[in-house]
Length: 221
Image (cartoon, rainbow, N blue to C red; front, side, top):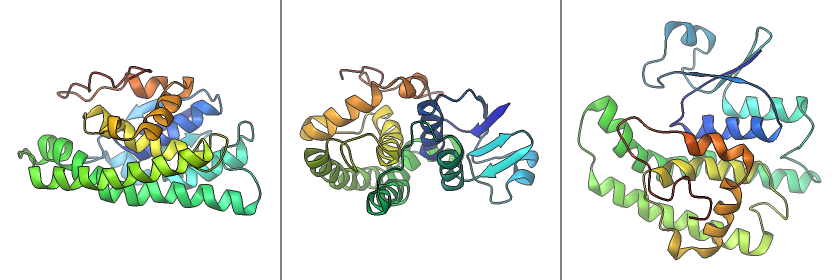
């Protein structure tokens, strides 16, 4: 059995779920609270981070390790491919969205609207949300520029870069904070990504106590 320990509000977990679906893998999900991990999970991964991939008694922790393992093991539908320069570009963009976007946008917007509400029991700080949205516009401009030239983020075909970016954006879109109408190329690109069968389960995710934006699961916005 393949088990993915995850949480649906973490983009790193969404990224791995979409990757596994693209590779047509059968797997079971186990939800864990990222802010209060069980002792069993801490024993498995002392870093205290999700996701965790478990198969046949083997454990792989961390989204980068899982990504590379899946790419090397399940070679169908590779999402990091091409020559060495092209693969490096995919990895550069994966790092951009997994880290820079996460710091610039997710931690500001989701941190205020989700973490503060459910963990700290505090009201969100509007200045931080506005800062996150301003940062988001910078990233959307970059996506607009990339897809205008490449069709997808790293080239003509879907890659791990697209999955990483869409996993991050999907949560911000759930919260209704993506100004899609100002970024036509990015909007068309995201529509293509969320129309893929691998994204179906992501669009069914719900955050308890927070309703998704009206267009969240609408494939045509």
